Length: 239
Image (cartoon, rainbow, N blue to C red; front, side, top):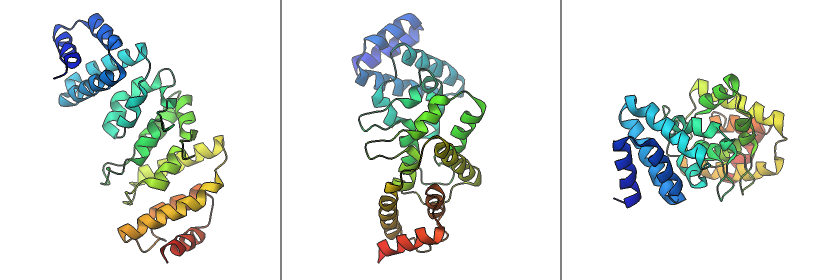
């Protein structure tokens, strides 16, 4: 075990919160990522310890900014839930990594979420926008990465999971699309790229009936294009 992590554990055992904070501040970003990962795992082991480790993590990040290397680690519902308080301070939802991606980009493109029960948290994020002051979250929805993709575009463009979204997640994604549209114009130049990418993904997964594919409906909605046109364009890719 690395010395910095062993020191963290020792200080946790002593419940020396001041020393814990100082140790975190003195550690490198790479060490911080390991330390934050450890506290996340501890918070998942027992529900009774979740609040303690979440508050400790939030305090660490509030005193030393949000580490960019952590952004790509937050890509599941559990990690989002744990780090939400830290993301809500200092507009951390807007923090980007070297790929100019924010947390939403990774949450929406996590193709490892293959089951219907573990899908991108569209409803959770939509609820945060409805019931809280989350201007930074709305701004994060519009940020573009180095490929010029917003988080929603990245989902439509690269997520390999074609399982239909649950109804509440589907309607929430439609609401997020509307929120983005109200803040900035859609980048129409990205449409041909979508058709190429999703068409090829359909070939790999043997998805034949594009009319019934939920992703087709979402692309048509996002780009305000008739579904028949989207289907026709995708069929051309597969020929």
